[in-house]
Length: 306
Ligand code: 13P
Ligand code: SF4
Image (cartoon, rainbow, N blue to C red; front, side, top):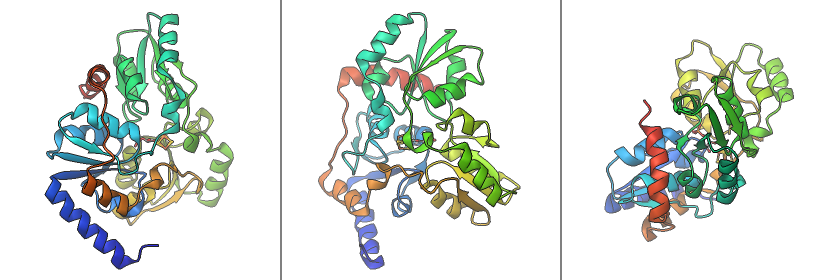
């Protein structure tokens, strides 16, 4: 276990290496606390995708999971994108294969394909437009077609269905972290904190969404807590978000809806791995050009929606 002074040394090394490599550190809201603390930007998937394009630098160190780093590499092909934990993946993104999506497109030739950003570059390349948890409803409503194949998250697809007249055909994928949050856990949390406002992520099941006061992306949850007049909040998403909540609104009390809501791949990262990635400029994430060019269309169409 690293001591505080070991950690300080590592943080200093990273700071120095970042200068030498002209690198920026993009960090997802679920990353370990000590990684969030050294971020140039901490954010949700949409904010980090935008930052990959707008922030200057030769190197992006992406502290998150593989689809996020891939998205950054697609959007900024001239920057070297590093993923310190080379095997940090999102199991939901692996719940759909390109050949399966092609079959679904054949079965529904008039439907638009909307892919959640939690998907491989190959799936994005087969899609009309991408979305994140913060803009899924907007994106579904923005496509011309009346029918939408929504991949791979069935829960986000069903959530979008609540706010559109279009017919949404959700894929059967899910996030194991959010899908195992239950109404029973909500009843217990409401009993323990009767005055608290309950916020959940749209990757949760419909029966959990039904019981929430607010549904938002990770950064949406942070904005809602910080701007709310209330003082107590139950947070229904991955527990890494509590670090930012405690830092940015220390006067509010935030309780996790489930202590077991842990994304193991997000939690694999460590300061040593960030340092090593900057020393070796590896593991580097690249996307084959023909796939990247098609995937970029889907992502840029999303980014063009205000
Ligand atoms: P957001 O940060 O975009 O809300 O996404 C949550 C998530 O599960 C990312 O994998
Ligand atoms: Fe994937 Fe869920 Fe982890 Fe997000 S929290 S990276 S959706 S497994």
